[in-house]
Image (tube, rainbow over all chains, first blue to last red; front, side, top):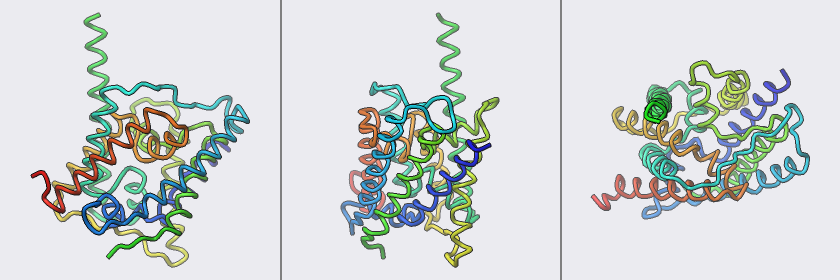
Amino acid sequence: MPFVIASFASGLVFGIGLLISGMTDTGKVLGFLDIFGAWDATLAFVMAGAVAVTGLGFALARRRGAPVLAAKSLWPTRRDVDTPLVIGATLFGIGWGLVGLCPGPALVNLAGLALPVIVFVVAMAVGMLGHDAWSTRTLMRQIEKA
Amino acid sequence: MHHLTPLSGIVGGALIGLAASMLMLLTGRIAGISGIFGGLLQPGAGDLGWRIAFVVGLLAAPLLASLSGTPLPAPAMPASLIVIVIAGLLVGFGSRMGGGCTSGHGVCGIARLSARSIVATAIFMAAAIATVAVVRHGMGG
C-alpha cells in the first residue's frame, strides 16, 4: 500500500509541475516548437529545471542503492540506438507537433473533460494498444520461423 | 498571445524533477508516462496498482488546483477531429515504438545521460519542430 500511495503522490506532484510549467497549455508547447514564428522559449526552462532536479534525485537514488519501498530499482538497461527508436521518436514528434500534447499533459488535461482532449487520449491509447499488438505478432512470427 | 514565462517554467520543471526523483527513490520506477500508461493497457499485466495510482495522481492535480480557484484546463485544440485522432494515434504508437516520450526520454533519460534517450529526444523535437513549421508556415509542403 505505501508503494501505491508513493506512486499517487509522485503522479500528483508531476501533474502540478506540468500545470505550473505551462506544459499542459498546447499553445505554449506549440509556441516553443514554432522556432520560425514568435518563439516562446519557456519549455527550455521547464526541461532545464526538470533534468537538473531529476539528475540530483537519481544520483541520490544510485548512492542509496535499493529504493525505500521495493527490493530493487528498475533502471533502464538498454543503451543501443536502433531503428524502432528512430522511427518511433519520429512518429511521436509528428503527433506532438500536430496538437501540442504528449502523454503526461494529455492525461492532466483529461480532467477538464473537453471532448477533443478525450478523443486525443482515446486515440493515444488505441495507438499504444495497436503498437503492442503489432509488435507481439511480429515477435510470434519470428519465433515460428526459428 | 504567448510569451516567455521562465520562472513558472523552472518552478514547474523542478516539481516534475521532484516527482521523478520521488518515484525512483521510493518505488524504484522510472517516471515515463507512456510506459506507465501503456502498461495499464496490457492485458494480464501484473503490476497495475501503482500505475493506476500514478495516473489518478496526474488527474487529481488539476482537480486539486480547481479547489483553490484555478479553472480546469481547457487547452486549445485543432478544429478537426481527424487531425486530433491522427495525432493521438501517432503519439501513442510512436511513444511505445520508441520506448518513451517527453518524460521517460526527455527528462529521466537525459538526466541519466542515456545516449538512447538523448538521440530519441533530439529526433522527436526535430520532428515536432518540422511539423509545426509545415502546419503554421507551409514550409517544405
